[in-house]
Amino acid sequence: MSQSQQPVRQQQAASSENAGGGQSAALTAPVGQQYPTRSYLPESVRTTSVGLLNQALADLSAVTMQLKHVHWNVKGIEFYQLHELFEDLYERFEPHIDAVAERASALGGLPMGTAAAVAGQTTIPQLSHATVDGQSLLHELADRLSALDSILYQQIETANQQGDLDTADLLNEVSRDVTKALWFLESHLQVPQSSGSKNQQFAGGQDSTTGGARVSRR
Image (cartoon, rainbow, N blue to C red; front, top):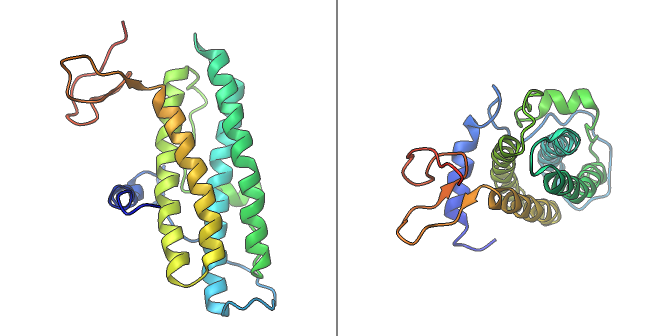
């Protein structure tokens, strides 16, 4: 992560506490049972990392399930394109779930991957079943990926600070794919600037710099 990215990510992290659906953003999940291991990392470090990984597991699992849901249910003129995009993102995220869970287990932890555990621990807001049009789903998924990205940033910083570089590296791999997925989604929403425009705008939303009127497509 470049130094130029850090202020933006830090600002996102500060605002992520208000992004959850009634839950404040959490860096760590309950650790639960731990098993003995010959890892060189001290027990206190492993305990913290298992908590970070279990929280990442819950949030990543929630977003991945939402991607599969919208893949099935998206409607509208852009159906086929978005149907394929959401499937591609699902397939990109799914291997990360296994890698994160295995790292938690390798550190002597118990990965919390049941549906009940994910629903109870994730900070990612639920998607409304009533939302099916492509543009609305793009907006909602972009919000969730932005929140996930900022939480991952804080988790990476925590793992780095305590010297668990392998966990930090693993979460950084996840973060790179989350950032790329967010780019894919936002590119569908960004309206190209006209010759006289100074402000980047999002389709169907507010001006991203001035909070101005909604943009209509022609």
